[in-house]
Image (cartoon, rainbow, N blue to C red; front, side):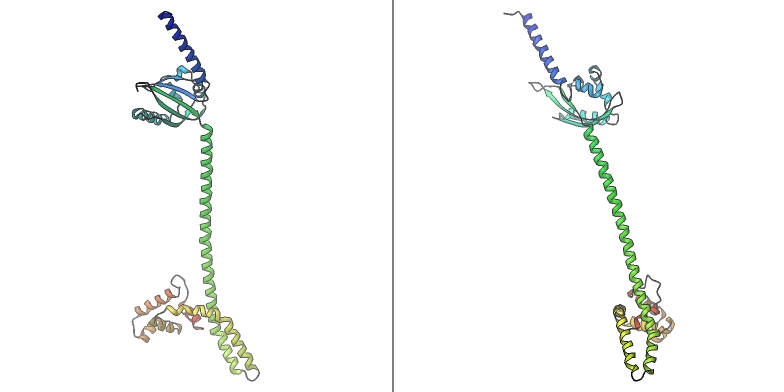
Length: 298
């Protein structure tokens, strides 16, 4: 039988062989691999870790690895790692930036798990680092494109909103101009054309009478469509407002209307305001009498 010393040498040889094989497997991993002791101090890093962080194994041990974590990310990382240790988290995950001595910068994803012995005692932690710089750059690019698209959408929405407002203003102005033109036409028909036509009819005899009648009929057909639209505006006026409107159309002043109706001038002013509001003139500088005369042409 081998002596105890020989057996010890044999076990040490097997252990060295296992360590060598494990080192080959660990160093061949595309992931950075590290081991921390129970106090969360680094005791081992593989070759990929050293190449990724541009550190030697000796430089990475203990807390040396932290020197390559971006200064803005290190406080949060240490805080989250400490909380995971205190809470016994089964899997700690974090994404953070690194800054190598050469100035090269990037992103890594860390995943760390606790390691327990057969009796449940905490032996330490094993973790991996995965290079995710390309993914983070793509995410940042996508976020910029998304923000640019959203900004273009906001600008276009604002532009369309402004165009809609402008279009509404133009349409409203066009409608007001149309109504103003219709009132002007009706007023001219009442003041000039109809009196002239009446004189013409009085002077016509014989064959000229049908011609005068045809002129009146044609004039009526021309003005009836918008005369009706304007005249319906008075349908909402109260009887008192209608009486005041008739007197305004006759050219009476506020005092004269008050005397005619036996009311105060303030009452007449109230009726005038109500008439203008119901006829849509309260925000426009339109002459009330001229407007009523155009309606009176009907």
